[in-house]
Amino acid sequence: MNLKHALALIVLLPAVPLAQAPGGREAEPPGQSLFAARCGFCHGRDAAGGESGPDLTISPLVAKDVGGDTLIPVIRDGRVDKGMPAFALGASDLDAIVAFIHDQKKKADLNPGRRRSVDLADLQTGNAEAGKAYFNGAGGCARCHAPGGDLAGVATRLKGLALMQRMLDPGRNRGQKPNPAIVAVTTRSGETVTGHLAYRDEFTIALTDDSGWYRSWPTGQVRFSVDDPLDAHRAQLGKYTDRDMHDVLAYLQTLR
Image (cartoon, rainbow, N blue to C red):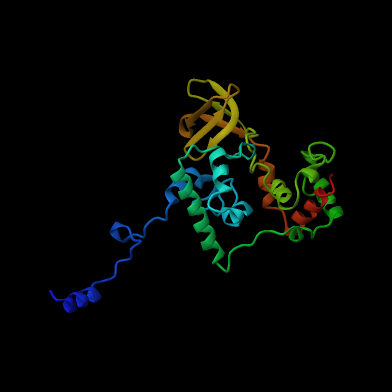
């Protein structure tokens, strides 16, 4: 075959993307499977926030990271006080995870409709007196909380968005503190086991008992009850108006 015919054949052949896996599927970005397995439950498979971890695409820590200089120590050593475990990973795996996080951030930054971070000014729109009235009245907050008790000095410990998040979802980012929900499980043999809720879905109920042991059962094989003090907060989410939330936040900000 002469050069002319060879060039013609190349032109006529269908182009095959280099970044394509067998079977026509797009190749997985480097680090994606590692991130999904190690970090996805908390931070979401796309690093945009998940069950309990923040959106890494808008994280200040990610924004200032250069080549893993800030991210790798956090991934490797964890943040136990904030509920993030340490990961014993090799250098290549750490580099792959960091590269994936930065890749997701770049994609998010190119999206004109992406959410922006919340400024403190966005939250300073409430009326503290109205919030106090709601706290003691319609909101029912005073049934469980007291400004001179568990909420004493809360505004010095939490500010801005962190205070709003704690108000709306106090179970989020609890670190190593046990789940406040108490579970009582009765087995078919009649044994009753109690402890802090560790996991629950349609098929499984699990708890950590007083000795620190993790125990689980298929939900169809036991009877169980859950006493969760945070249920009131979850119910309240469906009742709050935007004005209510900002008014209560303004009131909480006075508790210094």
